[in-house]
Image: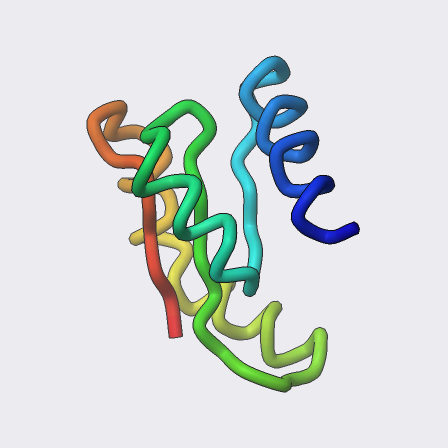
Length: 79
């Protein structure tokens, strides 16, 4: 079932000018194949708490902002 959900999430994000934040390698793969929009932030964290995800996103705020503003970029990997 998961494989059928990824394209739906992709299309919703694309249609609504949203950015996808995911730990899912499938979103990474879609980004490489389809490019943007939407942009994908790929969290390479393994098993971790929501707090750890929040910490990574907060620590990388400046990189995320630059990524968001650069229309030529489609994938940002964070760990």
